[in-house]
Amino acid sequence: MDRLKQLQQFLEESPNDSFLKYCLALEYEKMAEPEKALQYFGELMRDDENYAATYYHLGKLYEKLNRKEDAEETYNKGLQVTQLIKDQHSYSELLNAKNELINDYDVEFDN
Picture 1 (tube, helix red, strand yellow):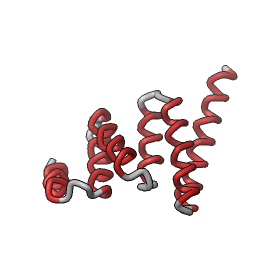
Picture 2 (tube, rainbow, N blue to C red):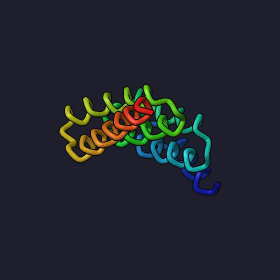
Picture 3 (tube, rainbow, N blue to C red):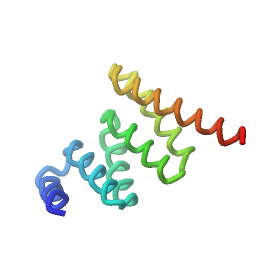
Picture 4 (cartoon, rainbow, N blue to C red):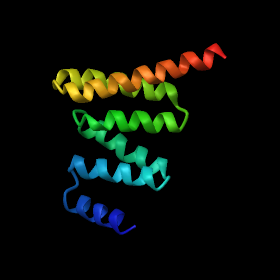
């Protein structure tokens, strides 16, 4: 909990810091508080859509919450953004995540 308080304090001092919002989202996800994590990921997508790491982790969170369509939409948006900002590493990670998600869909429908 100390880490969480520290991150919140840092964010109060620097409210537009995307990295801090990202860290808070991940921290809340680890604490099994997905609604809080979604809140911070949502702020990142609204305020700093070029923060590439958001798309992968938000997509994975949606998958955990069984919100597969939201996950796919998030991956697609992230693929567009990472292509525009020329972030090949993040693009590749998002493409792999999307392909895994689609393959999971195919397995579900085959059964």
